[in-house]
Length: 171
Image (tube, rainbow, N blue to C red):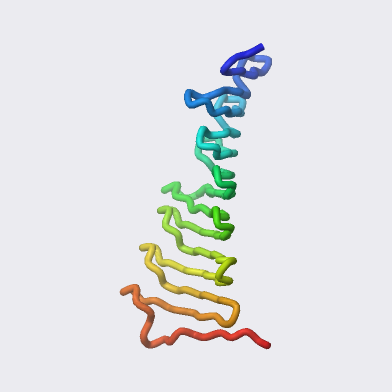
């Protein structure tokens, strides 16, 4: 038995899952809720990236787990909102193709507000905090020897009245 699409239906004839091959030759499995809305998909893209997406009842992606063709993984989480504007923030955890892990928290506009990263090769950890405009407000960095804290006013330059705080490791 061969086909480019198989559809699994419930006892009422409603599609509940589909196994298919896209126009570009990429395979995917999609799962549907009782109202036949897509709720989850597992796909291997033509580029070689593998994805798992979990959607809410409105079809919005809430969880997206991916491994790109170089093997770099990422996890994206998007929240829901009880406010009228419906804006939601999101979080992402990723490890790039060089093995550098990063964590970001973004506001409802998609602006990164907190970034945490570790450059394992250089041994430097960075934590940056940004304002709603995306401009850097604080930067905490630590290497193998010491740490520094930089504060930035509205002009984006390091605060002149507040020197960088030097943090030293105990020996």
